[in-house]
Length: 350
Image (tube, rainbow, N blue to C red):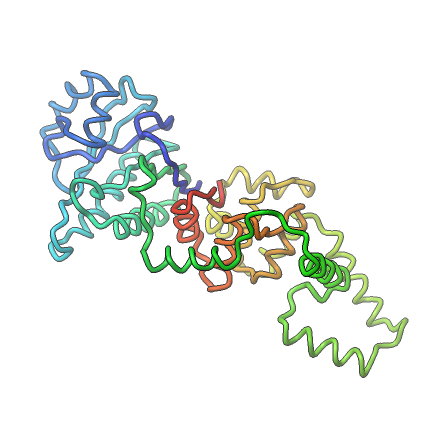
């Protein structure tokens, strides 16, 4: 199951276990720790008194009491000094040990805050990278729904360099209103011609140009067996549904189904529905998630979107951000989702 970034109060997240960024005593404090103790009620404090505290990087579990979860997993994050005193490994241990406890207690869903990124001073960009690394590594071997809960959008950060690059790309490409200029209509006509002719399907621009030049000089016989076979293959591709195209692309990539849907941050149950139903109608974020997992170039991404009845839009910031990552060859869906979240856009996958 996938990792999902959400903006919420962690005490209100309905899941099997929430993770508390606690202090060594486990007896409550400020920030997330204090909020969880207040929401859970006095019985949580009573149980925590029996646990004899917790070391940095370790985790202990209690009941959830008045919270909308079965368990609270308490972990103590490192206080950041300069990054040279083992802080990274200790922070990684917080996620690993918390996930291990959740697995041992048969949790199917867990919610984490961004551990140590508040009063403990861990740089937020690095804290986010570590959280994403550890959670996605765990999810590669286990089925669980994991939420990374951000209380305040302003407290969420990606690198300033990446943010400014994406903002510049948005400024250059974003259309605030749906335009229907002559150039836009021409672009759509050319796009449709390419799709119908088949030149759209998987060819690089240089290859398309060579193909067109060769066709002009040496046109194939009108009724040759080669042209008939090519037409039949082309019609098969045009008639494919989204589901059929996806499964074909997975086979062509050499990936296993499980590798693809995990790389796409898609739930296994959703993938099963897509596989079993050739007429399945996916959402746009689901289509884009699979295009990213398959590392499709932009034309093939647009082709897959078209199969599901969608298109990339210059009036969608989310689409422009995804386009930015594809053009820059970055197909890490969690990097893309971090950027989408930072710009207050819907994330990909489930």
